[in-house]
Length: 104
View 1 (cartoon, rainbow, N blue to C red):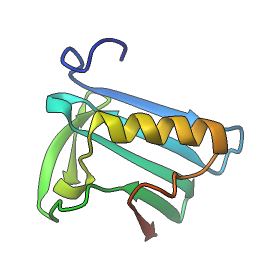
View 2: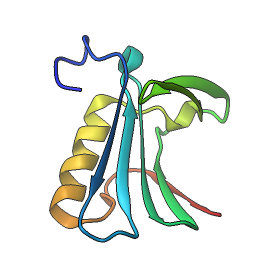
View 3: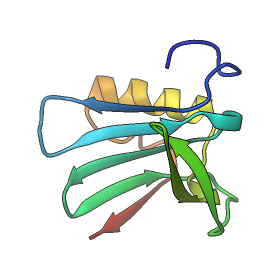
């Protein structure tokens, strides 16, 4: 998914830092809405959230497949670019962004 944000319809981008137990996953793009999470292992995920968003579910195309996500999980391109840059440099979530942790 290369191109201007107005041309991107849907994408999925996993970024790994060499440790097989965690990766950054970014998807979406339709209407300027993206979703990002960091999977640490099969039991723990950090989800990038949008302050002021709701728990209401909506559909977001990610990697060519419609995926149900919460409204607050849909973030801007600026948020995902900042997330990707920080993760690539530090291998962890940017502490200056809002994250929600889930245990499975």
